[in-house]
Image (tube, rainbow, N blue to C red; front, top):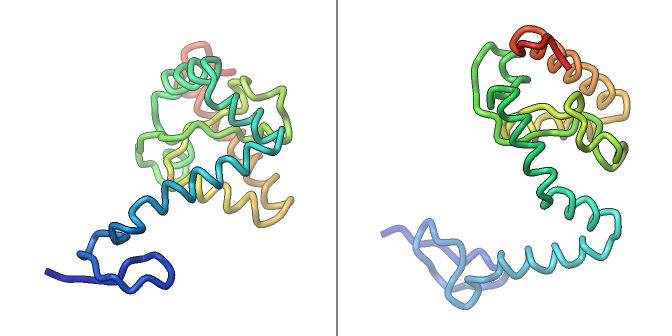
Length: 154
């Protein structure tokens, strides 16, 4: 069986390949995440945002968008023609910028995890790149509703 060193910095214990940490450091990721989450929740705006994403209102809204958007990644469909499952429902204009649009159907688009990361990477490039991507996403969403939703759009 192939072996490797424990992934904990400075630890020299040997573990099986495919195992991240030795028994001493097994809970490292869980502890780090718990500390990270506690630190984030000290910020009032972040706490409010997380509370929203854990709310019944978001859960129901998200389910309605998934049904309406046929559960597909709209960005993938219009860029490659492939039908891929949407795992995330992304606020085109982020709720940190537009809290009032958090439950606006015209501001939420279904994306795969890969495309969600790709779009956020584009958002992080520059203000201009972000605005350009937002316009692309709004146009795709509008086109999707025009082509596939019976009432003809948002």
